[in-house]
Length: 235
Image: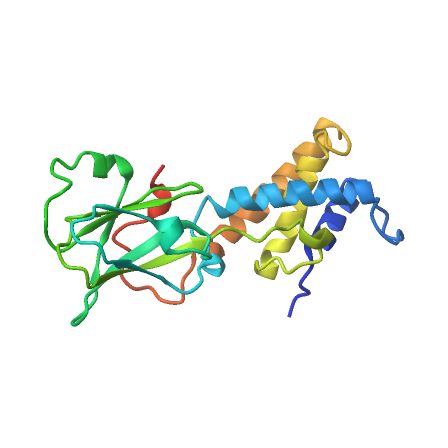
């Protein structure tokens, strides 16, 4: 099994790639390390918001629809502690009977619904994104015993926490790409300014590594039916 690096060690591999740290050095310069951790945290946060990564999908979140005729709910309040970045699937769970998959629609599609107060069993759900996400259901249930069961993607871990001595939670296969992508950032001003040729080579290596990883990143253990809606398309 491959070695699992800490964010600190990933920063050190990036510093070695740009010639800022020697193989024989006992550790990185503290300022370089802090700078590298900040930029690593930023680039991982950016990529974690770009696609559905299975390792960022924890258990489902249950949202009780316990207010009759209510069209919207504060997802931040109902799923407190879950740190919902976006929702990948939604099903309706009645008090008795089978769960029913719902279609996840964009905010634009929800806004185009003429009668948002139409009563009935929910068929569609809209989840806004941002620090305080809201959840809209349509039609609006008149009963208070229904629950929404949401499959969610959380935010990536804080890579700069504890000076980078924390578990990053990503597969080991991504560690080389992390170091390459970080090296591109650090060598373009934050720590040094590499020549154009060096930057170009780093960027090509990083892009090639990412292209190899994308099929792995989105692969599931099952080839079942595709989800009826994906919330990360909603902006």
